[in-house]
Amino acid sequence: MRTILRIFESVANTNCRLILSLQVYEPRRGAVPPEGETLKLASGKMTSLMLGISLLGAVTLVALARELGAREAREKIAKAIGLQDPNRVHIKSINGGAGREAIVEATFDGTFRMTSDKTGNWTVAEVRTGDRCWESIDTIRTAVQKEKILRTAADLRTLATALEAFRRDHGSYVTASSGAALVDSLAPQYLETVLRLDAWSREFQYHGSQASYRLESLGPDGKPGTGDEIVIENGKLLKGANE
Image 1 (cartoon, rainbow, N blue to C red):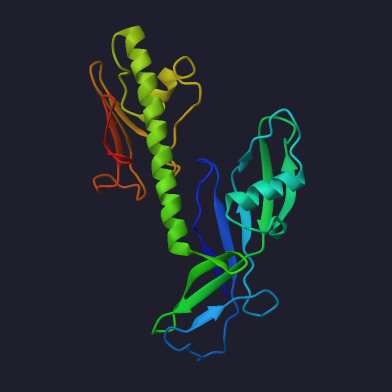
Image 2: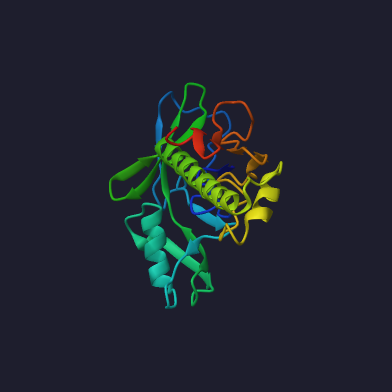
């Protein structure tokens, strides 16, 4: 049985997606675990899980004026994902480590604690990050979601600042009805970094006239009008982080 968990997405940036691949031993047909039974996973047993990270986009590590080596990459990645032992991280390749950015492909070994409900359905409850140290999967999801909201709000503020600079020079805001058109009008003179996508890899929404504008991310669910949107209107954060 093969299970795919999508827990961490785009933590570093909108191009980074981490897919956690779990291989779980399937019990004999008809065998139902008792309610509340906990499956403890340890390496070397058939019930062990190996956590593999596949970097579909780019995990960006900054190496200032020196080459990024495998040891440093292993230590930085272990710290970033909360692993106490860097040796659990296995570096497969490093590309571009002599410049300001590097693409690092890596995997790491992981151990999970799973629990079953009264119908025998198993769920992943915790991941072990060190000796006698377990982290709740729900806590990780919550932390990642919060980070995405904060990052998206910060990017919207950057766009709003660029809009104000544009207005000072031209006497009006950018007149457009899409995020792509907005960025095309602002970059590179008013916007050094091109910001087209939010932390969920969806395009920013923009509606602007000469006198006013509305910048928006549709938020975690990607649907309008559900209450989790992140909105800046005429320089003021109306919905989202620190609203």
